[in-house]
Every structure is written in structure tokens, then in C-alpha cells.
Image (spheres, rainbow, N blue to C red):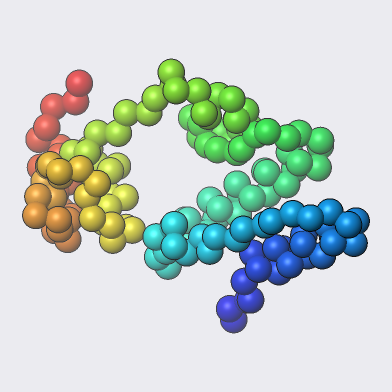
Amino acid sequence: KRLPDVGLFLKEEAQAWFRRRSRNVTIRYMDPSYQIRSVRAIAADSIYCSLLGSNVVHGAMTGLSGFSCGQVNTRYVYIPMEHMCDPRRQVRVKPSGRMYLRMLRCTHQPPFTGDAGPCRGGSCHDLSAAIAAAAAVPSP
């Protein structure tokens, strides 16, 4: 069963809240489906999202704000926003690495780089060949 769009409901409720307090505000709602590529979640994705959501709620209920949840070294942690947005901290993704190739295959996304390594030509459908080719690339 598909539920109605909660974003529009929240926008209307927020506008009504401000109107009751005689505050003139403009609220813009951008449908996230235009920004996020949606594919059907596999079971592992559903479990992971459920765990992240639970951890965010637990953090918020303890009074925390300005954080997000994530998994670091197999542990679920609270990550302060200033650390997440720090331009000095960078995550390097290897476009020819196994994890990146698996992500492309599972999400049916095209490569985001001009040179997709074993996925040249915009297709990564032959996953076994792509992973074998990635395994042949020495790690830095």
C-alpha cells in the first residue's frame, strides 16, 4: 500500500501553524523524487534504513540535534554535522573498486565518471566480468 505524500502534508501544517500566529512565511516544498533516484529497496537496504531511522529517533529523543547517523567500522554512530560538512574531510571512492561496481549494479545507475573502468560504455550489466577486472587492479 502506498501512503500519501507526507511532504505536502507537513508543508500545509507548517503554513497553517504560522498563519495561526499571524506570521507571513513562504515555505517551498521540493518533491524529493526529483532529486533522489528511486529503486526498489532490497532487504538489506530496508534493514539498514530502519536501523538508521531508529538511531536518529533515539538521538533526537535524548535531546541531540545537529547530527546524523551512520555506520562506521560496523558500529552505528552519531556524526556531528560540522564533521560531515567539513571540506577537509574527504571520502575517496575508487571508481574501479568492487564496492563502487556493486553499488552501480544494485542501483542500476550509470557510472558518474567519464572513465568507468570496467563499466566503459555506460553499462555494468556483466557484474562478474567487472568484479574480476576490478580484482586485477592493484590496490593503492
